[in-house]
Image 1 (cartoon, one colour):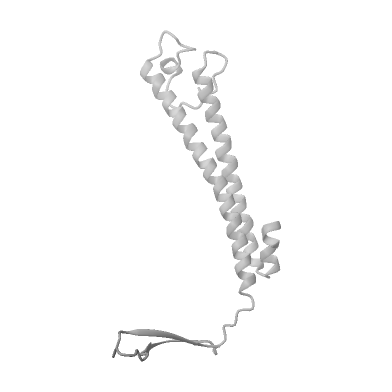
Image 2 (cartoon, helix red, strand yellow; image 1 turned 180 degrees about the horizontal axis):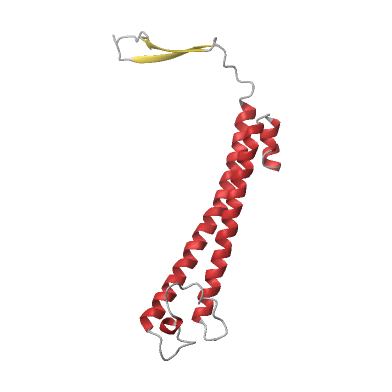
Length: 165
């Protein structure tokens, strides 16, 4: 229950101190991924919105389109020299970038939830198996079993599991 309340406390309770850096490294990496993908998603969404509006002052997309001259693709700033195919290419690529960063932002959030559940499960399994007996007196045997069946001789192959503890 400690791992549910605060990640890493279940590992402290189980005296598995070596797992604590892994718990927080996982959360740190996923938090970085959420932050990076969220900021890039917002940047690309703003660039797409600026590209599709008719206001000349909104030009945040110009720095994002690499290797292309704005006079070829921008109908607002350069209405006489832009090419329709270049404009649609830039618009499609901005939309693809928006979808890309949104997808990975969402997957990062799912990763945070999955990592949280995994750390809770790890602490729970460690706590449950802390008193598990692994002595040499545990034994498991697989042996053939031939129970007598009334009226039928040799009714097939049967197995039994015999365990001693």
